[in-house]
Image 1 (cartoon, one colour):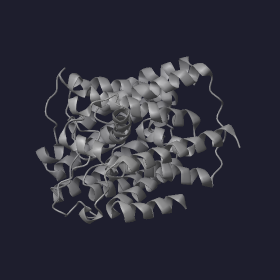
Image 2: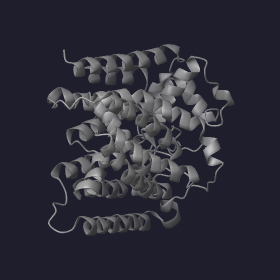
Image 3: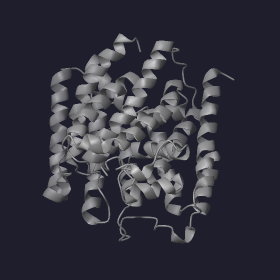
Length: 351
Length: 55
């Protein structure tokens, strides 16, 4: 009921487009929470248990999203891909993000939907994720000074047809690598991942067609913390390289309800809350004080590193790869390398 | 009320208060300037913020 009321308020006081994007966000949150689509868990199960189902589900999601998004980008020049610059900050940021997401047991979308489901650690992480995202964006110019090249669009370079074929070939090659790692006799994919991947791919393409830009999570968090920092007088946006840019300064000065990423983030939280109201979650084992501290620190690091990496698993990996950005293809192996360390740290602290 | 449901309630109250505070201190929205429902086919370049933005 509250979600319907908020939708109506958005239609009446903000814009129909923002209201529809809120509904798309609700769908994303419901799909993520309903099917328990954990990017973090999928990678961890592949590393620790040689269980390929989550990872293969993610490969399917990337392929389906690319199949829907790349033709849209080729047909409508006003739509923008998620083009981040290949850079030193991207390599470092993605590695650290992949490490931290195993400790905090949630990536960008995972933190959102688990917070919406009422998981205490993820609810606690969210404000720190936002703070980290804000500080990462505020320091971004210094990280970029370490080295960057211009963003590379595979769709623009190759054309949509070849870009899509190349994407599927690369995803299938990764699938073969996964197959070699896990060995024979494994179940390849879970049914929940099939319909979850299909739903998320359609919703991601809808996000692109409606908003004109791909699905993202992290920018909205940074904007929220930047607004609070500015309101308290502890941050001068005009003197900051990132937040003084015209578009960022405008979003800082206007209602967050006009920001695309913020509105889908709120929708994802709402969609997960809707799922939580319909099913009883088993109570998780309570965390120790040390686990809480480590989890919260990891949440802050998640936010900071995701800005250095030009997105999380959604903004960089899903949106980057599905819209043909080279930075998405750099993000994935670096984050996976970080995960290899992260699963050991996670075990060390008994999560 | 369990600790989990209590913390969830506090979380949602904090989020609603934050959105309300932001709304109260932001300039009014001119609904007559609202963008078309679909950016695709509108001819208007997207101008929203995204995580992939370097600047």
